[in-house]
Length: 400
Image 1 (cartoon, helix red, strand yellow):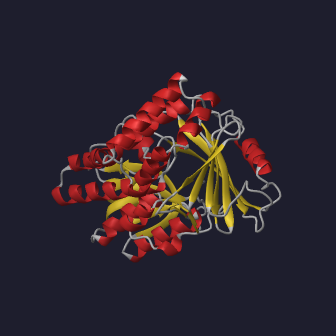
Image 2 (cartoon, helix red, strand yellow; image 1 turned 120 degrees about the vertical axis):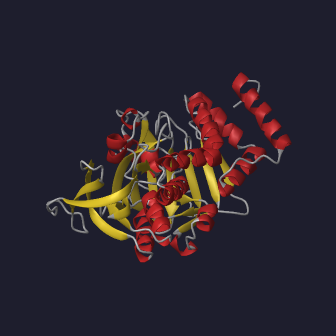
Image 3 (cartoon, helix red, strand yellow; image 1 turned 60 degrees about the vertical axis):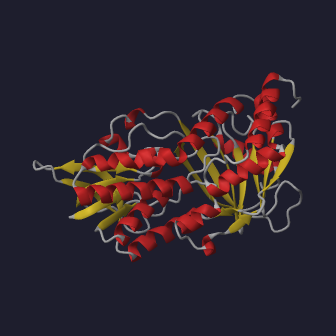
């Protein structure tokens, strides 16, 4: 019997497995092979520090973010003294899983089926093993892992969550994200692409309620978009963006799509022996869609709560993960959620939003918050100036 079975080997699950295994607990890490998640791949320097991730895993360091409006206006925001790191999820996630295994976690490759309990209440995880390549037809007879606790880190449409956690089946809307990994142009023909610049497009033609992006990853580049609306043509939008930016003729390496939640679930545990982490718990930042740092933070907090439960025998310890996460990041999520609901509502507001992004106070506070993953409170005058500038744009006193 394992102290914990972690379902899902992305950043959240791999971090939880590594933390528990490093602390001496017996852990099984169950993951499906060969499925990198569609993701822009942006990580802040704080992630490297908090989770002891080597800079060698970065495939690029972005120095400038370009924000583009529906009318084609662009605002370049320098990152300042820091940087936005870029990772390739295919290799980044595998490094995290491998680290967990080196620290004692037992890796299992397969497809999660369900959580089961016998008459004595012993919990087990049933899964169907697959070959490491995850090829169709490679599945074998199902197997069972006995566990004292289960961590569900199996994505936005988590089967663990739907089976075990009250309220998870009625999750709010999710953003459907799609991107294409393409070869980065060696000699860009225009300023529409730059190797050390991340481009974010606020344009309803590319996304009616979210944004589209071009994130350079060194030898490759992620070109993607997302939307709440299932009927919106994500692939067509990406093709339009590639055509607009001169990336239509470069080689397409792979295409990926997946749902992304933008609100934490109201509950992360079943009050007994199961807890959620990462996308399964809904910890992706509204407005930006940033998820890797928050997923790893959620995985660490889930592992901490599991450890407390195993050491004390009290299931109420599982509740603390959500409380601790919201204490650290709840205000940021609230502010970003309000921003997304208002500024992304239509192209007129998006145009004004891009105008606000040209403000130096906004730029500096934004990247200070991004670098350190918390609201910047020590500059009240800057916050006051931003407030009145927002009021000016909202009322039309300031032209967009």
